[in-house]
Length: 389
Image (spheres, rainbow, N blue to C red):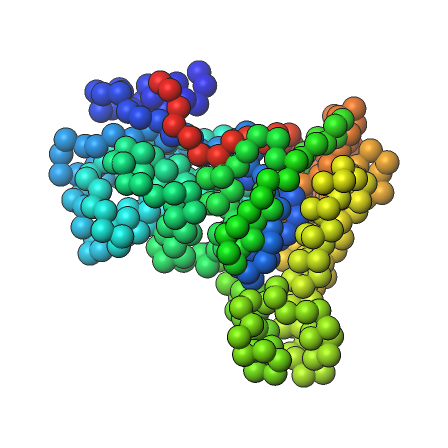
């Protein structure tokens, strides 16, 4: 049984009516890590794995929410989300936060019954949480004819994560989930939310993810600490160079280089990574436009070095997987993907070498870490949409 049929059948069995079903994809970020919340460019793509959410208004004064993959269910009473206690289950807070954000905007959503499932691995860096929030926000917008555009929906989902889950995430994940397009990456300006589609013509190469099996919980990680360190750099530049500097990525690299003796060394390294990564994004976009996959792959690998040495968000498992394929003639590039501290590496691998590469990595990784990395091969996909049932 496919995911859509499973979600619908579980909904009908539990609630006795047909729901409306919405899908929102996860994403891979080709290059541009940790630049989103620093006001810079990113270059992600929506993928063919995502969250599938069935939803319909409840006839009672409470709604039942069911997470099939997590074997969890809760009841939400009434629609006063401003005063209601947040759910104890982490997954439910992504839905709760979306409802609360709609309420802040003057949209009072009635009680709802929800069943959802997905084929995105949790904690692997493919943004399962953003896909869940995007699917729900998009679905409510469609069901109740609320009239929000995708930019407004992305901001709503971001604020839900910021305020109700506690992750000070940027806009990239939910924006990509809502605006993805098959065959394209999105070059997104996270400061203005202007974006353009960049053709992603990989030919015989494939986007392959190797999952370390290390779950990264961003709420409990150093994510917020890194963000604060970048904000410290922005404050320094505003004080000494330009009081109206809009974001870290708007600062010239020369400002940073001129400030080495004045900045805290850790803050310097964080800013160095971000500013160098922003330059790599520009070069990577040009490489894709020129169909120069060799250049694009080298930029990907350079990003990993910066994330490991300057931003310090890698881990031994991620470094091992990148080092294992470095320099192989059938692998154009490899790097850790996502917030860090676990999750997946993203690789550009020739289609004829994918299986052999995985076999080589599996044996060596198992010897080192006593576990087997999972492989995911993904292709680009469209953004959030309603599915016919």
